[in-house]
Image (cartoon, rainbow, N blue to C red):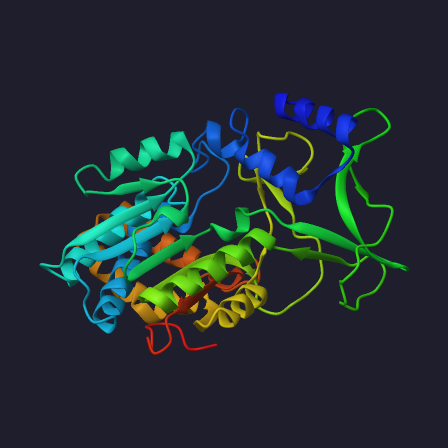
Length: 356
């Protein structure tokens, strides 16, 4: 058992089983043993790869999109652009380059919301000279019209899970098995207030922190102007199913096997996020498939320009990146990943994405 696993087991022995939300929070954010506190998880040597790490074109298109939205916002100067969970800073660096070319003379104020000391160090290196400011929480971002970006951020936020039984919905918990190892179980009594109808054994995830965050950001853009652009994998209609998953070495793993040593995520419920944003007064654009969004922004045209200056190996890598980002199979990045914008009322239309 990992050090964090031993600590979680001690918590369970002392206070009883814990919810999936607390388990995720400990695995990902524990101050000593948390997954994102101790490593750079990206790339071939890590556990997964995100779109900005596949190709510079992803961030460049986001930057071009931001330049258009900046004009639609009335051209605020300086332009506040912030990213939540910015990885190695690759997306922000590529977006700033494209944004600077598309909006020359505009002062740009980049802000990054990051809790991982390892990733922040990588971001500081990548963004040296960009005048970036770092934050531990979106709450400390400066006031004003802003373009907010969240790429593969909401999937890492803790969720509660409930399993349908004949007498109602029971919360799914992490406790101890017969041999002292971590094991899934159910609360003995059903949780009141869940009205969803589903067959016995169905699993529903409730993304409480994600809903709270999107409400707060929706209220911000409504009051101060701007937009939140979300990229993530998930589903657009309410549904049932256990999408909690662990990734280690670019392969799926047992979520309980190595706490703190594997990434934990849950598919994003875009319908729930959209409803929360609308209830806060914002206009929701999308969600739409990531492949369609990138194609509408000119991914293939950008790839053709890059190939003009590329050697054979580089051209092959460009083509492979386009194919990967737009893969239309159900499990491919082009379809599984969605794009949604939460905007101030009256801001629109937005490139590549229609009002939902």
